Image 1 (cartoon, rainbow, N blue to C red):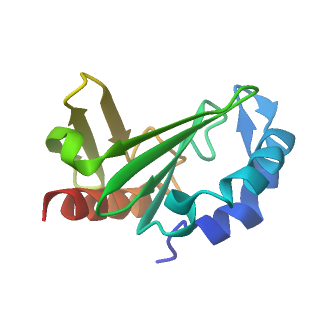
Image 2 (image 1 turned 90 degrees about the horizontal axis):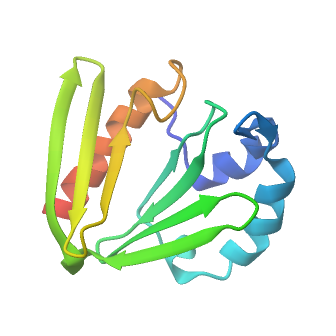
Length: 140
């Protein structure tokens, strides 16, 4: 089963939409900037929340030490938390085919990843595996 890597994302972003608008120009402008970020260059896991569902697009780059979220849009926002700022992680098995992960930070922010709602049905099983990998990385 093929994973959604950042390299594959860079090949496929021309097909994406955000809130039913083409996202290609927004992402293209952002890619050059993102290439300079250590969190992007040195990530262990890439998770593109919202890919292939034409809603909001948040790109997660996760390492053993940081969780970086890039909110793609007209005014992109980048937030990085150190993993030591994580209060708890809650993994919920929604069904045989889907998982939900809630990452609770000490500042009150909650990041919720859901393999069923974060992408289309074709990619959902692969996103489930990514969520499990994120959970393992953040908890071990």
